[in-house]
Image (tube, rainbow, N blue to C red; front, side, top):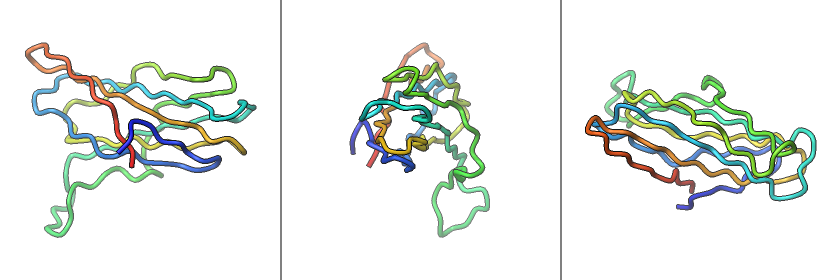
Length: 136
């Protein structure tokens, strides 16, 4: 597992699953996009959050199921041509979720973009936990 993922031009990647803490009352994700070459127009990283609350159809043969990439909502578009690296503002995550994955799609025509993300969770007792999102 790594803390970042190099995503080839016109490619995409999905992070490893991150389980939300049982005591989490607030959560935010920040995503960073670092262009591996000289940025050009259209060199953007589109970010979606894939969420799970478990297994919606209670299939005994499957584990947690996540939002499909075509149905997930775009939460950030990071333009590395205007800023490199580009870093998102905080992206709110509903604390009742069981877990999330970060999906990133590279819109560049020739450059790889390196994606990384961190989640910050606040528990009811005020404890803050910061965790790097990992990629395989």
